[in-house]
Amino acid sequence: MNTNVDDDMKIIRGIVSCEHIDFNDLGWINCNLHNADIDDFENRRDYDKAIKTNDEFLFIFLIIYNFEKGGFDLKLECKRQCNWYKKDSKNNRVKTHPVSVLLALNELKEEYSADSIDQLLKIENLADKWFKKAKSIHKSKFKRCFNERGFNSKYLESLIEFYKSGKIKELRKFVIKNQFDKAHDLILQNIRGIGPKLAKFIVRDLAFSLTEWGKSEKLDWSWFKDPEILRYIVPIDRWVRRISLSIPLICSRLKKELKCSDLADNTNRSLDEKLSLTISKVCYEMKLNPMRFDLGAFLFGVYEIQKRAHISEIYEKLKEKFL
Image (cartoon, rainbow, N blue to C red; front, top):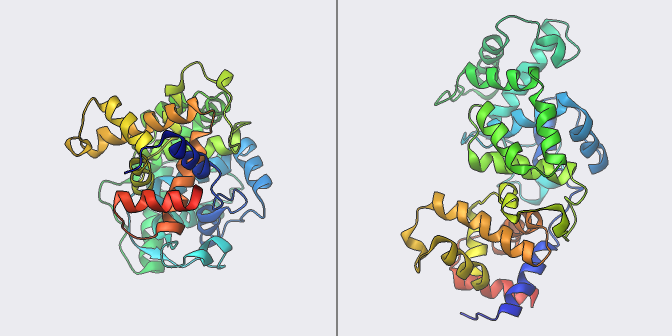
């Protein structure tokens, strides 16, 4: 395999500026909102403003992420056939569990004549009532039982407490200040059902909206005393893992981080944690935004590779595209 460092750096820059990265495409978030009968966003500016100023929408954002990424596999088609859905209708179907939870939230608002989440918080045993209604909606609307494996009303209880205690505002403040480790830990310690990987997805997507540099390809060293904090905004999925490992520069650095000669000797969990750190450090040294690399690698895999391929084949595809 070609190990030309200059070529690898060009490939990394190409991924950071990947043509498939389109922040105006609000993707799965709008699809979830459509299906839950909640107003969607016409443009990224309005979405970013909601993330920055609207606690109730940030609460909805966390609900969607919690249940969308929770491993539930029942899906439905997007109501309005939005652009993101049309790109790949086979893979971009919306999972039903977050939709059921949000529809239940809407019904509770109507039932108790509540105009906001704040008014709903006055209801006794809100989590239990919300969970019971979500199960009922899921069964009647989707003809399936709500997947309760490892999930119960305590999940909703933790989300309610996260909102009620003001931690929503705290989360936003940490991300704005580039304190991604604190934002990551705040989520892990307070919201049931969210693990380290999902917490990284949440912090990364919030950073796109809340930080001044979030969507930029460039990274200013002066913003960070320690590049290790960037690993909290680099979640690793299968495409990011496979594409990263196909690039010799990143792969060799990862082996040094793991102090090994063969990556097969390591579990996915330890490999992925070190891979987040390695990507962060490589991008930091190149003054590139690691979040853009993370998203670009995922999208390159989805749209350019699309199916399982050997590491060497992926690297050849990257060279063909970016060199």
